Image 1 (cartoon, one colour):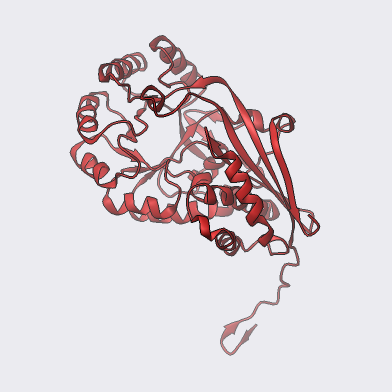
Image 2 (image 1 turned 120 degrees about the vertical axis):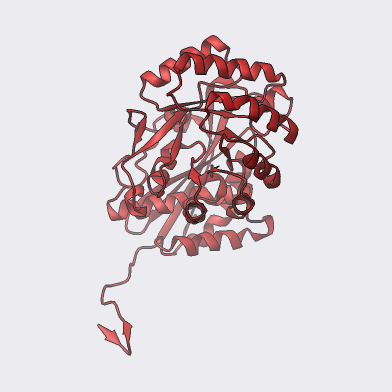
Length: 388
């Protein structure tokens, strides 16, 4: 019906409201200490665990959505504490109004800013709200957002770290390709450039010219080194060179992108949409690599996808394949998703891989259930609610 030219809905408004939010800080141990270029340059210690923040949003209708964020090496307790502080503003609110709720959480913690640990804490709750909304609709997250595809290209990273000897790289490459993964990424940025070149040459020679191959310097080169290494790496026909420079050096990345034929990729270390916009405006990247848990959740990620698409960029979300497979499926251009099996012990479900691609799960929501191992790794647990 219409009144005065305005379309009026006769459908009843939702009566569902957020009843409580359960937060869990979990420390997931890694089977092997992980080292990349930041370790070899003395800037970080080997990584032995991942700090996870889980949020479960429950409503008065009896529905629950599950979301997560994470931190590596430091930040887990900060994320948990901030989420615990801002979560009360959502109690009693309509869980469908996700953008409004994201803004409410930001303002609840405005004094600590809109990036970093603050938005990463919000991300876990935001992701849970999207999971809840998709579950309510009986759709996967990809279908709720509007999927462009049912499978996405995928590549393996966990087999290419700098602590792995060359023989191990070749074995890992064979295993990854046999599992159905489509591409391989190698860590570079070794203090001795010749070591990097020898490792890349060995893998390229082993897998042949047709396997997609990427490298990741983890921000460890200066501008001159990045240009020299970029030129030396051109011979290997790489899909991209990732994080050749400091993540915030948009001008340096832009100069490198202009100078090299190999595409430049970056973005994973940025913690807001605004920081990614600087890369886009500068023409700094050919492939943008946002991380939904780092930039504030799915709400912010979908905003960034529009900007990236308008700029004609390729998309390759960082880490957290369990979530990013859905988001990548909703991107207009053909994306890549990074395969890490590190988080698999946390969940009951597994992602199917075949023919170089990940199959987008068709279960409602993100399609994840916490495994029975999670309680044993939980270091803090709190519930925020009307009576909490």
